[in-house]
Image 1: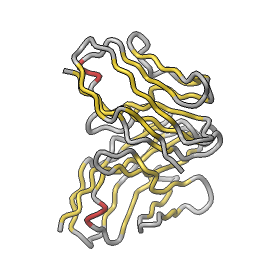
Image 2: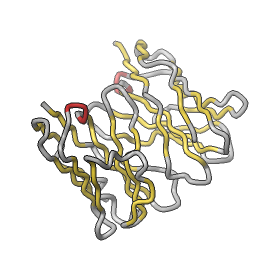
Image 3: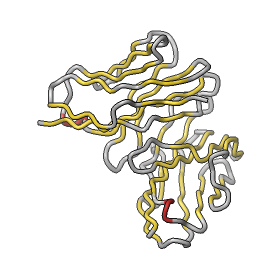
Image 4: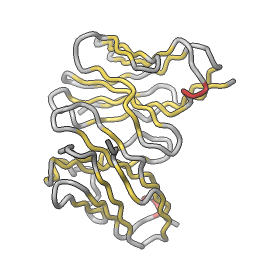
Amino acid sequence: AQSVTQLDSQVPVFEEAPVELRCNYSSSVSVYLFWYVQYPNQGLQLLLKYLSGSTLVESINGFEAEFNKSQTSFHLRKPSVHISDTAEYFCAVSDSGSARQLTFGSGTQLTVLP
Amino acid sequence: EAGVVQSPRYKIIEKKQPVAFWCNPISGHNTLYWYLQNLGQGPELLIRYENEEAVDDSQLPKDRFSAERLKGVDSTLKIQPAELGDSAVYLCASSLKQAGELFFGEGSRLTVL
């Protein structure tokens, strides 16, 4: 079984500042890793994913995450945030042998301040 | 292409009443999920279907919750009777059989009074 820990429940940051949302996972097998974003009153949307290959993955809106196997981490970063990035961010993990069974973290609320 | 469609978006009922939620997944997606999301928490899996077969329902409270996906397409999640602690958002998601990405609906928010 896998588990996910998101260390910060709330992260306030000023517009155009950099941000890092932390995610650590626990698993005894190889994993796939995901970041989902949830805007108010909406469903979750996939932001980026690591399945294999390059450990650094990027989204189309400037976020990136790096898979660090030794530290069992998959932190999400953005060098300069916008007001529109305000949302709840969820890290998730699945067993790579059964990619459809996702386990989610408890989420990090990112609030971008003007 | 239409996304995952859920209804109703909001439902308010009194405790001990029944309630049902409906989900229509993305066309062609074999796998359908129902997740429970409590306030301030991440989604937790209730049940997963592969076509019409429930392959993982270990977290579904079977004394009051039931689900069906009769023709392997849309699905219904039912609670009978509802309790105060069932107040939450019920999320439906679907995926292609061998893909790692889940596509979520907007959720059904249940309030039990």
